[in-house]
Amino acid sequence: MSTSSQPQFRYTQTPSKVLHLRNLPWECTEEELVELCKPFGKIVNTKCNVGANRNQAFVEFVDLNQAISMVSYYASSSEPAHIRGKTVYIQYSNRHEIVNNKSPGDTPGNVLLVTIEGVEANDVTIETIHLVFSAFGFVHKIATFEKAAGFQALIQFTDAQTASAAKNALDGRSIPRYLLPDHVTSCNLRISYSAHTDLNIKFQSHRSRDYTNPYLPVNPTAMEGLMQPVVGPDGKKQEPQSNVLLASIENMQYAVTVDVLHTVFSAFGTVQKIAIFEKNGGTQALIQYPDVTTAAVAKESLEGHCIYDGGYCLQ
Image (cartoon, rainbow, N blue to C red):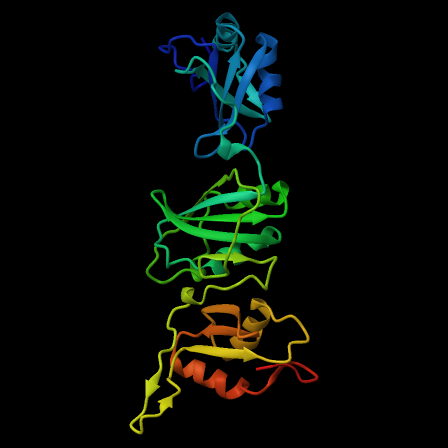
């Protein structure tokens, strides 16, 4: 019998060539598992970092007697199994083989599948998602959508290493509270790897964004609050009051991107959405503010002025 205060395994389990190991160090590696188990026989498969805290694993021996040998040894030993100084608890698994060492969602890639739990689709903007994930590297593309699992996003990084850094840091965490609407009480990120390697973003919109292509066509219908014609008492069309500005950009000698416009227009208040598109051979943009007053101040201040010095990019 083990002298450890906590049993290393359940004696009532039916023996199996697959062992279940608990209380492992966080992100325990396959090499560490093999090193612990190889004195008892040949390891044919492992599954690491399972469970909510990633501190469990499965190890499959080539035959049943080798697994029994390991369980028997630690059942009678006064020294429990250790990895990185932590006591490892061992029991027979109720499975008889490890079918797949890694599921598709465990295979590292440059695109992450993010499920945002506890929110509706309109609670988390694409700008918020970009802000959170770009802390780990350049985000190429984002696509958001709603599935049976909830509100989800595909986020494309340059490489698998950058994506892995973001996944390891954010999986199971919450988006910072100050980036969420007041009515959202909890917001957890559940992250896996996607089988995609390059997202096909056809339009810039509030649901999809390609940060590598500022000239990608924009779907203007994705912008809310589009202005409708208003007719005054004299029968003439009047310019309506709206929280969305339509900016025509002339004399474009330099690139005008979404980020450039955000910098210019956010000086007057919170910019909710921006869309850039080509129309009648010119460049136009829709800029959405939370209210008509803020939009009016920005219009009054910027109309006829240039984005860059030298008379370039007249608004």
